[in-house]
Amino acid sequence: MWRYVLWRFLQGLGVMFAVSLIGFAILHLAPGGPLAVYATTTYMRAEDMARLQHELGLDQPLPVQYLRWVTDLLHGNWGRSYRDGSPVLAAIGSRLPATVELMLVSLTLAVILGVAVGILGAVRKHSIFDYLATTGAMVALSVPTFWFALMVIYLFAEVMGVLPSGDIATIGRPFSLLDRVHHLVGPSAVLGLVLLAPWSRYTRSAMLEVLHEDYIRSARAKGLSEQLVLLRHAFRNVLIPLLILAGIQLPLLFGGALVTETVFSWPGMGRFFVDSLGYRDYPVIMGLLLSSTLLVVVGNLVADLLCALADPRIHIQ
Image (cartoon, rainbow, N blue to C red):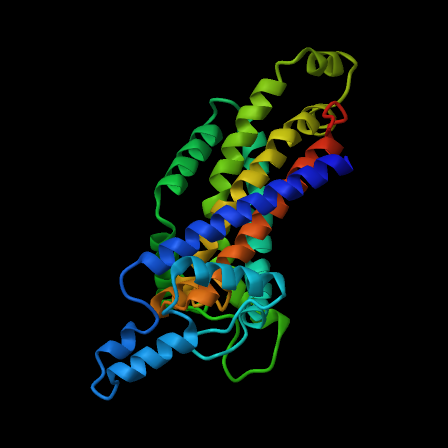
């Protein structure tokens, strides 16, 4: 077990190194830069531009800049934002709870509803409910997240006025759990319903395969209730592919959170990433890229370990 965890940890370090190297190169080779906003101003002289480039280290060769960034990173220094000079690690840490909150609520919503719809679709195969669930899943997979989010804002915030159009809390009011939940309903529903479709389809497919196994027939022949057969015998074996799906969906969850946070003005890592891209804030972008990669690597490792715990036939070596 520990050898496997150590091996996956080393693999994760390799993935993070590759992502940081590719991301660093793409950012610095793209046209423009963090000083492009000053190029059009009349009061900025050429010597001022050169001085800023030297202070930010942008006048050095790209490999030197990368080695310096990695060295600072290993010493716990994630750099400072080009935009306001704040420490990158502190800026990410202040926005991480909002993103984790949105992702956990959305994932919980997707798992509960998706698994329930998938099981009912498998049990009631070729019924009206099954056809409606399949059609709804295909529509959810086809609709862009940003369009879905805009429609939710238009219908429930502008037309009906039952939900706020954005932000994490009402401006000028003290913290209230009810107010936080009120603002969380819109973005979590959008992200959760987008993720619901894969969960329902995977659950239905896995449940259909399991329901035809011999041990299910034996359990029914023993006189067990259908509910007990489904929950104790069938769903336990369906749980393995669902845990694998949870690890696969982590990158999709981050991508959906990025779009959802931007549309709903949710002050999390996704919106922070989009804002930093607009300012070409290299230290912040690299910090967000590295932290999201770390969360994905850790999430996949946790999913593998949960698979081993759920099925004793899986031996991690």
